Amino acid sequence: MSKTSSQDPMELIDRYLQAVGFWLPKGQQQDIIAELSEDLHSQIEEKETELGRSLNDTEIEAVLKQRGRPVLVANRYLPQRSLIGPVLFPIYVFVLKIVAAFYLVPWILVWIGMMSLSSSYRAEHTSAGWLGAIGSAWSAWWFTAFFALGTVTIVFAGLEYLQAKSRFLEDWNPRQLPPARNPNQIPRTGSVIEVVVNLIFGVWWIDVMSSPVILNRPEIRIVLSPVWRYLFWSFLFLALINTVTAGVNLARPYWTVVRASIRLATNGAASALFCWMLNAGAIAQITGAGLSAARALEVTNAVNAGLAKTLPVAVATGVVIALLDARRIFRVKSAVPLQLKGKISAAVV
Amino acid sequence: MTNGTQGAPEILENLKLELRRGCLIVAVLAQLRTEQYGYTLRKALADDGLAIDEGTLYPLLRRLETQGLLVSQWREEDKRNKRFYRLSPAGEQILGQLLEEWQNINSSLNKILQEAPL
Image (cartoon, rainbow over all chains, first blue to last red; front, side, top):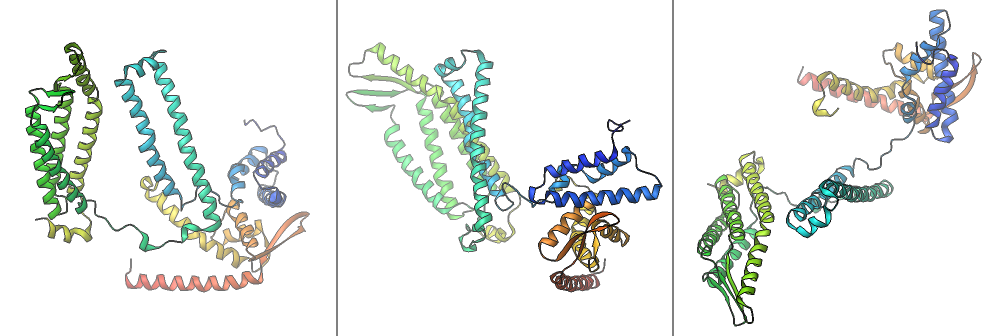
């Protein structure tokens, strides 16, 4: 037996109508409730005529349940409203993704980096134990996320209000849309810059870095360790390959699987060499006027240790670059826009 | 449930609902060429094969009245106050235009189906 079985059936209807009325605007409340009440009574009356008796409270309950939850019934009488409407919603989601990718995720990465690399930061934040440090970082991150996403939402709710008033988003010009872009096209400006930068780097590299003594002044002298010879020739070789591939990209400005794979290989090799350089104790000696031998050794070790400490950042950067390069290969392998197929096949042989 | 996970029966139900939505407005306007109150209107539509639940009908009647296509009047009948609706002159004009549009859509659809039968 239901909880309401001992109640007056008509009281159940009054309670239902009151609950619907709660969600209705005051101006229309009485009118809508009167009509809804009349409709309910007509339905009940018809059923009673069919059965030849009064409906019991369970049957009334079934009628009301079939009508639906009061808030939903009331909602059908209200105009459709939204905090952010369908026109602005995709832009809103796009901005939220940008905020997450460029603010909230980096926030976590910076925290992890600081905790891994900075002993003073770690000591300061783990005084209450690791769990306490994670807990306080988590709550700080949530506060940041809530504030950032809340601010974006408020701004978009304001824009929605303006859009509803002035319809400013309906005024647009197709000519102002960005040019159609093929993601596999290589911008020629980028290739020119790449050629120039690699040539300048190569000249500078040969001029300044070919000798183990990279700085030789009366006040300071920096000597690199023997491992530098390998690094010197490897970086020079990579700069040469990059210059050649950038030149090819300039002539044939569409990525192919071969060129995208070469880019992955050269970037991967450059990242590996850079990490090796940071970790190999590349500086053999730093000496300076008025610097004792013991102090000079301390400075040299400190610089090498400082370089080694940046290794996690270099590794992370290398991984990100490799992933982007791998994604490019996958993109080139996958479908090519139909309208550009002709152009590509003409450009790449 | 997202569109990607909808089953065929659910897709059909949603499409049928969309198809019915516009037709219901025409049917309600056509029924109200003679004055009726909500409950009898709902019964009449159901008897003619166009069942409509009260949660859809009453808000629709209010909207059509706000748009000036219907007029209503509270009146006592069988010892109960009932709200009677009927088509306004503006509603009659709009109904004529909607029926014309309906005929156009119907003949276009027939033409398409004749050109490429199912």
